[in-house]
Structures are given as C-alpha cells and as structure tokens.
Length: 81
Image (cartoon, rainbow, N blue to C red; front, top):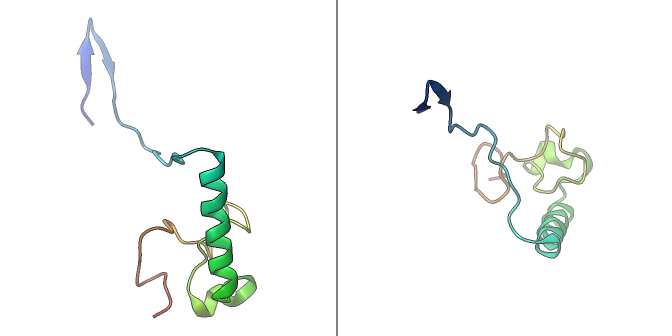
C-alpha cells in the first residue's frame, strides 16, 4: 500500500484481486477443456478429488472447494503424490 497524494486527495494503487484470464476466448476454452480432460483421466471428477488430488477444471463451478487455487502451479498439499 502506497498512497499517492495529489491536491489533498489520497489514492491507493493496491489491487486485491488480480485474477484476470489472459488470452482470447479460444485459448481460455482450450485451457479449460485441457483441465477437464486431465481431471477426467485422472479420476478427479465426482468424489475422486478426495482421493486423487484437487480438480484443475472449473466444471463444478467457481465455488467448488475441491478445486485447486491455481491449476498451473504444482502444490503438494493439493496434488496426488
């Protein structure tokens, strides 16, 4: 947090939620399709996420508690080892 002052007005340049999808519609679609196929082949759909690690896809919605926080980063607490 670094306030920027100008004429007695303080502004914050802090961005709390910077989860923006990069790329166009097709790249986002194919990334999500790849994550879904990965979940299906690794048996993570349904209750399989409890045994084989958290899901990468958002097939069950954004509120899914069995979904990884960031699917592109390996995390030993969320992945099957």
